[in-house]
Image (cartoon, rainbow over all chains, first blue to last red):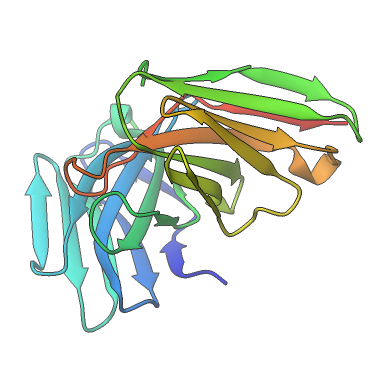
Amino acid sequence: QQQVKQSPQSLIVQKGGISIINCAYENTAFDYFPWYQQFPGKGPALLIAIRPDVSEKKEGRFTISFNKSAKQFSLHIMDSQPGDSATYFCAASEGGGGNKLTFGTGTQLKVEL
Amino acid sequence: DADVTQTPRNRITKTGKRIMLECSQTKGHDRMYWYRQDPGLGLRLIYYSFDVKDINKGEISDGYSVSRQAQAKFSLSLESAIPNQTALYFCATSDHRGRGNEQFFGPGTRLTVL
């Protein structure tokens, strides 16, 4: 049972463009929504995260938009760069303090020159 | 993350063999996790442990077992490996006292079962 659905599976964006990755969840008890970034040969690393008490969180070129009523959240990468080429995973968890994460299926992003 | 190490990094084995993947961390975290990554399926939780005496099954625990030998060590075993266990395996840690629910991942072990 896929509790966190992620799309698209792959994405090609031109340098300087905006990359958008979407996720939808089913469990209304989820209260923490992180995005992880994974480069080839490496483990995933936390990129940015949001809690449902805000609709948007921005860190540099990365923004999470959160729609609680639609049970959807998305990652926007502004001014995409070739160095952003990686696999991105959305995730969700319920409860506080280090509880287990349910991951989406991943999006492979390629930023072309 | 160099604070979470996994051994071996690569392993090729045959069907029916017993395999152990090891994870060690120097972050002082109390919580540890084992995931497998398959193309198109993302990361799926196999087992997790919130402290040395706590072991919990994840969503895909069948065919796997774990041991939490110490706060810093968490091993994953495949008692009798089968080809569909060919995957990339990740160990992760978190601290219940830490910032949010952030998990720190090791570099992964690529396992091939022939």
